[in-house]
Length: 506
Image (cartoon, rainbow, N blue to C red):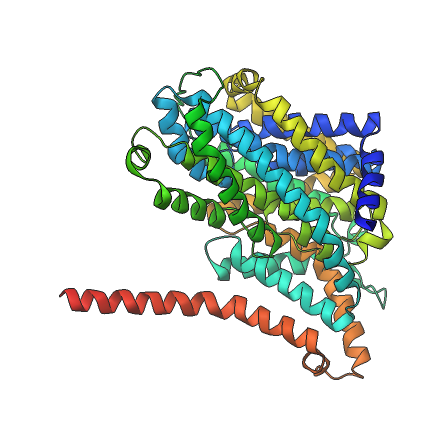
């Protein structure tokens, strides 16, 4: 009953005219961002961080949340009509959705993706509402050793899961941890790694890092390495579904939601695994003529299931972000930076220290889902027109927006040099396939982890054994080791099995 009362209070806050307007603008902007190929929600949120610095914190978070899940809706439009996923999460949708579009069924594909996103997003939001407070209540009981190990788990999962190489992920994390050490020491007050620059005494602003790594790097990378791309678009058909389409889509939506929600809840990162799992499930369960459509004319289940899994994962990812302060994607890493920008640290204490904000944010997820369904079904034609914006003008606009926003924070030219320096680092990271999210996570959680580590060692009277003497801390340490060791072990066993099979064939 307490949860219901808190949620109603959240609706009262989120349903004010100003907050509803911010939610609508966020959802519309998120959809537009999802439609435009190559510009993901992480870039949009990072770019707008400086602009919303003066906006009231609840309105700002509702706005960013709108962009976050709006982009997931919009990404399917590009995947289906252009075969160009705006987000990695939409890659699987493109496989069957684009084939449906080529067969003249683009309208049915767009309809099932929008309705599936709504169903999955709503179910996952109910899961967030019911379980997030209990996770937070449990986490509040943790002490400094457990907090430190929890942050080590965040470092490990984000670095090991985001990106193709664990070594590159860890390297990116250590870059972020090093950047987080710049400025005055939290305890002694001594200047660290400032190079004699007074502008660095307060550390590097997380907003600059987010804007530089995501928005500026995206534009510079496109200008330097991506040539002119000729895109062919499939024609639009009326956005509707036949009775047979509904019959095939409903079970796929429900299965996709069941697959995606647990992946969002655990800090394992990424929407690729649940979307591919959903696609494989639908393909396996399809029979007769429905199965024959996979890979040929385009099967509607191959769009419905992965889209539902994608949105369920994205929404459920709010649980580890809000309760543990663990981001599981690029966008949630930037959202973590947005919280930090307002002096709020997501984690176990958030549900007690900022209860109004948290419940308004959860209520806005329900409101945003309805808004997105209304925005997406009747207005698909309008979103498609965005694809006609020339890339050079689009990227120039992003660069101007990012530069003006970064300069406006402190009116400092030093910040601009820093912004473009970080942008060039982002280009190099993209060029050599280093994930960028661990840098942001390392910068935000690094100083917090350092403080908790010092407190834990003080509690243990200088002994590091404190981390293995407490049951919860030891459990988290085992989980960290499992995250690092088990994937390699499974990969090694799979390679050995494959080698053995080849020997038998020979």
